[in-house]
Amino acid sequence: MILLTGFEPFDGETTNPSWLAARRAAEQLVAAGSPAVAVEIPCVFDLSRTVLQEALERYRPGIVLCVGQAGGRERISLERVAINVDDARIPDNAGNRPVDRPIVEGGPAAYFSTLPIKACRGAVASSGVPVEVSQTAGTYVCNHLFYGLMSLLAEREDGCRGGFVHVPYSTEQARGNDAPGLALEQMADALVLIATTTSGTTVDHRVAAGAEH
Image (cartoon, rainbow, N blue to C red; front, side, top):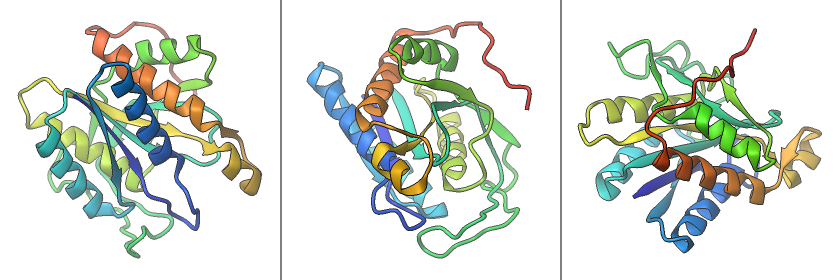
């Protein structure tokens, strides 16, 4: 089972492409014969982890792709690392704005994605969709959920692999925000490729995809 999650709209937007793309990708995977399900996550710090944990317990997936929106980015971003801190520039949808707060008290400083991010980057790039390996998922609800996911998976012994993917604005949002955007169809296709590449890859590719800053 492949679990995909996407967020509800936030920060004044009326849609969130992470949810629309995750839902569409799940439909495409099911149509191709791969069991998959999409779950919408609230853009609320602690509640987001609660909803994710409930989905993990209900569906017992083997692969988890959590997806969020990174408005202003130009590419699909495969996140490498989640850090143990909440530091909100803007309030979440419930008005919470934690500053310098650990996500899990006493937890590790960081967790790495267990997706084969280099292989996934290659697969998405080969399809013509712009993609990158990202070294930061921020310190907002996306990183909170990413860290929460990896913390939950670290407690399991079933081999479930997971990670976080950021998507840009949709093309419609991009016009309203004077920023780069990507078609929802491209986002969904990329998520399908990431899921299927993860399913078929046990050892990640060793290729350069780092950053100087």
